[in-house]
Amino acid sequence: MTLGKMNASAQRILRRYTICDWCLGRQFAMQGYGLTNKDRGVALKTLLLMTATEVYHQKIKRGTTLIRRLAEKGQFEPARAFLEKEGITDTPHSQDCEICQGVTNRFHKAARAVIKSLEQWEAHSILIGTKISPTIIEAEEQLRSEFQITTGEPIKAELNREIGKLVTTNLGLTTNFENPDIVALIQIPDFHVELDVHSLFIYGRYKKLIRGIPQTRWPCRECGGRGCQRCKDTGKMYPESVEELIAPSVIELTQGSDVKFHGAGREDIDALMLGNGRPFVIEVLRPRIRSVNLDDLIMQINESTKGKIVVGNIRFANKEVVKRLKGSATSSKKVYKAIVHVETPIPQETLLALENLTMPLMIEQRTPQRVLHRRADRVRKKRVHTIGIVPLNAQNFELTISCQGGLYVKEFISGDEGRTKPSLAELLGTPAVCQQLDVIDVEIAEDTLPW
Image 1 (cartoon, rainbow, N blue to C red):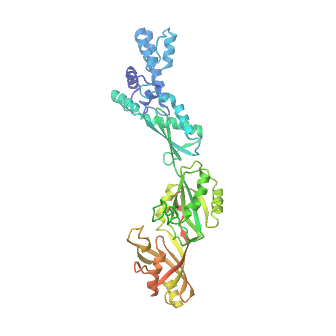
Image 2 (tube, rainbow, N blue to C red):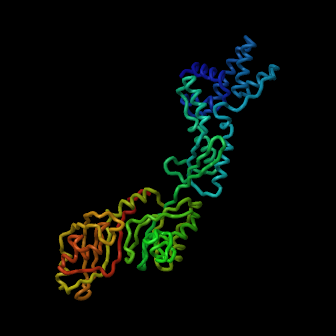
């Protein structure tokens, strides 16, 4: 658009609307770079004033009309000052801009409302959003339709940007369009602020050192968590879980409202989790504090759990790490140690021959009977990578097995009434049962996670 066309369009707009610098300039936002819309509006009004002044010196009445329009409908103080200098003092002060209803003159008030709403929340990044009154949106749409404006930007984009600049500069925050700590949504024009506080993610590994603890809170099967005689009104199948042992310290240090626990798979309730621990991410909902001292967190968790669990390798994470952990639960390699009892004595050479099976050993495993109530009944194919045997006596041996995540090891040992093939019991030719199971390694390539 040429300067002449912009000048003519601005003149026509001022005949019809009372309009502020920001709203006039925004109609030509695609013209020029490095300028605010207010800069554009002031520039256009300045150009119109210079043109009108020239007219005034040739035709006073016509020039006065143009300058009055700039002073009143354009809210342009230099035009008012010119008229007063010429002794014309009866020009009324205009009302609020008919497009934005005066909002653009109150950017600082909007920013202060956001800043006040953030007083109790720590954040490193923010994203400003606005919910604008339909009357403001409709007014701008009417203007653009009436004057065929194609060079503007939405008022929403301007408000988000200008308020955001004031907030981030004042608080020393960064703007993050993809994954901000907090999204502040401002109602326009009343400046009511709603905060969407994004979760804080903390990665670590846990060891479970006693049996009988599930990974996450397990609602009572009989009452569904409401509380009954069976669960002694706790609503839980078990008194505590790994999640519940970790959560109090995390909530205390972050002042979050609650947590969600995400594990890279899970071990059986009666199994220990040893080695370097199982990877997990604890998601803190609506945290007020984000710059947690992770060494303090480790120490507090480990002291409070009284030897039941131990956590380590704690670091900050993100939602993508959670997705990767969930996806790795069945693809990662896991190592188990089990004490196996066989019904009939097995010669040592027969036992040790298991170590020489061709690997990987492909296992077809139908969903075990013990988890049918919560898992789909289907056949899963899993790999056993290695098997190690240490005989203990004629009917007991220690089994070390490296396998693909998702293999039900107890059922691989017993066969689960033919639902797992081949099974250790089938290979040995005698019923076998897992008497004790420990997880001793969960292999996750942490350096490949999307930190």
